[in-house]
Image 1 (cartoon, rainbow, N blue to C red):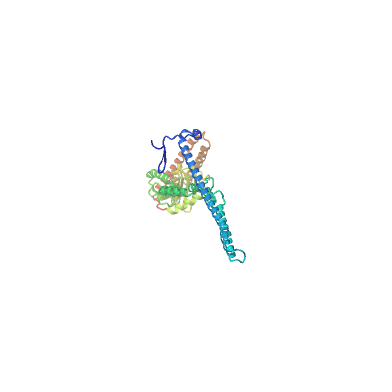
Image 2 (image 1 turned 90 degrees about the horizontal axis):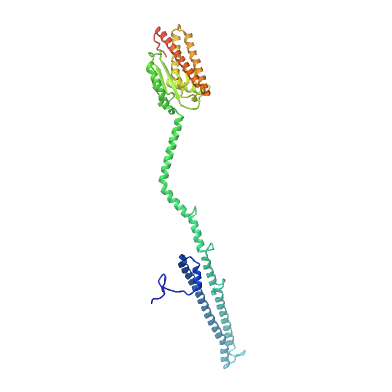
Length: 430
């Protein structure tokens, strides 16, 4: 039959071992069954640890007792030396003062006293420096220091230092966090650079779009729409339409009436096209058109806003003005062709007056004033359309009638100009 306890190199194997201890059974019974094996192993480890400490303590006590015994024997032997020597010498030579052996006796006494003092020092050394029970001894201090190093409650123990180091490493600004942050930063750096590049590209496009909002490029789609309208009209009257806004200089569209056109004289009109929501006043519009006429060598100009929001209240739907180079009109999209025909008529009338004094200037001027009055009424009606939605259809109908009236008046002017032109040579002056 094999042994119940088999000691291996790194473990102990227990087979069919009965432990006749009620205390052990009661202790294990109070623990969950799945944890009983671990609890028994821990109990064995603690017991063996205590036994080792106790044995070490016993070994130290044994050494101490043996040393004490040797010291006592040595002390007795040393103490008996003077008497034995004295007796032996006295039996042969006297030791009284003045006798031969008196110095010898003094020397022996000093040796005995010195030996006792040395023995006392040794005993004190054993008591003060080797006794593990005393915290003041060297051994006691060493053991106490070791206990402190292994005390998990103390912050300066091995466990405390390890816990503190672990907290330092795993802290938000610790070594581990810094290392992880460095690794992650390095890993995502290409992605971050790409995101930054895309962000800059998007911002650049936004900035470009915002810049376009402030330049003539913003009106490019609307400019094309205006060009199409003017080209359809130009094909009927012999005018030349040129889209010039792409060069980013003042002026967007150039309307030229050659001498042989229906106008009967050369007229150059520059058109500034704007699609914006903030209204401009007369002063800014006048300066803008004066610059455009000078830049494009035009003798008339139109400031065309896609909606009424692009013109100040003082402008309304229609406003006329005069610069050093010629007349201009500021108006909205619906009056585009009206503005072109109006400027052509004024230019032609001015030319005819200088060449044919017989022309019925009063009749023509009356028609022009009729146009202006109608335009003013249209502007008023449009404002009322905005304010009074309930009668919008009626007002709009009246506005359309007035537009027909304007077109009719322009036709009358053009007929009068045409009749006058048949009676004089063609005017080629500008």
